[in-house]
Length: 340
Image (cartoon, rainbow, N blue to C red; front, side):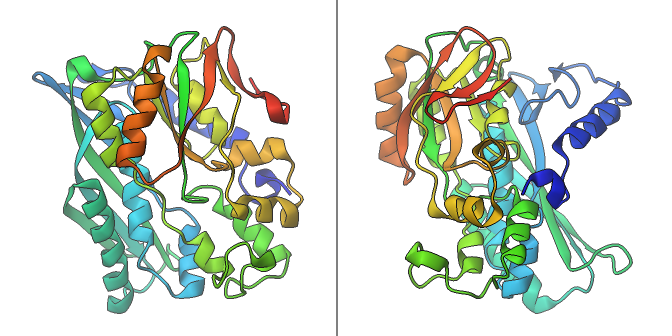
């Protein structure tokens, strides 16, 4: 099974994005980088600072929430997907607005969604300053949840990957599971294997948890530990490992090669999906985070201190996973995977 035959064609999506960007040419004075320039967030000058904006949603993970009638975690996902992106340009998240589109607004459902948004805001130390709830029965089947994050960074502390060079160390922080990407494929695996989301997770991999509960585990938020890291380490680059998996890392700087020598151990949910979907390893690592939700790239001499700081402030597994070398693309030698 592949992402493409489950309904999502990555190459077609990339072509569609290129066509979209080809029509967007306006650039206000003070814009940093290209308009919609391919990084994790957009920046515009604001005195000595840059204001940072990024936007994302929960995706088809909401379908599992609907099936389980459990809505209190997708708000965490929505905020996590945004604040983690903001961190990748060196910014501290400040505020958030959400967009909730519903087929039929249900106060019981919206209250539960609000609980997740509140938990995500608390974990990120941000304020939810507004939003929009749209009643769209002719357009929406169920609901969709997305949002936009405002963050800020001093202009001299912006991180866009230019400092990355051969010899740098790659540090990985573990994910909590699938996070909020690849669910069109993940759902297809569950459905074609004729499981129910209410079935107990097979093989005792997650004792006393159902498949749906495991698939709804919220996206990990990395704000606290990364902001502490910024205070003490000159970080060269950060990559949020979301949709497209390892392809997210070369977005930082293309003219170097990222060697993942010791990948983090994927959580059991990934082996479950691979086994029951008969998905090859190459596809797994270009669709899912495979156990690594965020990477941090620093000077070799800063690697040990970086790991120490992150371990102090994070509940994630933190480990050196690789090295930057001359070349291009991403490789995982132990799995014989090459993405160029």
